Amino acid sequence: MAKTQSLIFTIYGDYIRHYNNRIWVGSLIRLLGAFEHNPQSVRMSLSRMSKQGWLSIDKEGKKSFYTLTEAGKSRLNTAAGRIFNIRKESWDGHWLMVVLQNRFDDAKHRQAFIRELEWHGFGQLSTNVYITPNPLHETMERLTVKYDLGDKIDVFSAEYTVGENSRLIQRGWNIEEINEKYESFFEKYSRDYVLDRQLIAQGRLTDAECFIKRVMLTHEYRKFLFIDPGFPAELLPGRWLGHHAGQLFSDYYQLLGRGAIEFFEGVFKADNAYDPLLPDAGVPTDSYLEAEE
Image: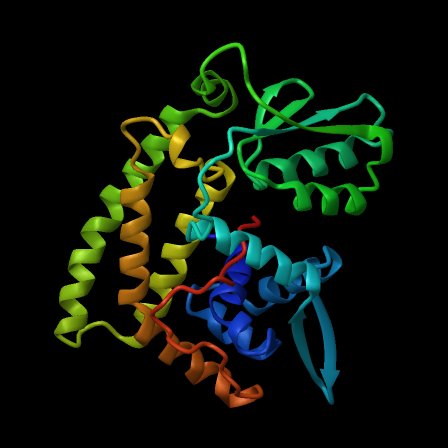
């Protein structure tokens, strides 16, 4: 079973993000109830997410509402760009390199920063060196401030001049493992996609089932954020299954869209200000989902 907090992040990214970023806790409990998560687990996860800075809480009478913070919104936008491959520029041949100095007084602080690097797609080249082919300069500026890194890291933009760039790819990322995971995803969900397309055409898939399937589809696909940085086309191996998996995800996501939105709105409209911002429930947008476990 998926973790409660992880599902809440996904629901915020796919739905609540487009409805003024805010929802009553009771509505979330009803939505998570579709996945058999109990109210206590939902409340504990929301409290944890607030302490982590992703959500803020406010009250109207006896009702508690949870709203995405600016940090939460930023995280969703970052995940969106990677999930849907919004970035289309050709690679400029430069690697962004982060070198950690041995000046971290707190091991947990250091590990939290490394986890951020990994989430943003950095590969580990050696013990204290992380690289990415993507131009994440603004991201590094933000992380430097967030973690008060000061003189604890050095950041370079560099070219690799002593061999093929594929050598760095092989050292920093497990390409074979990533491809295997894409293959497993494709094999599982291609079958489900064909079956559900038939059921929807026959009117035999309920809105609740569409919602559950779509959330779980997103939950599974977003795991690739932790292992695939979104390599530029120039660096991809000849046999790369990420494109096939991504197209399947997009098609399946849209197939389930109308029913999933109907179910969500049926829950949301009862106790929340109803002002949907999403123009077409079936089309992925550039502000999408969170990929934090």
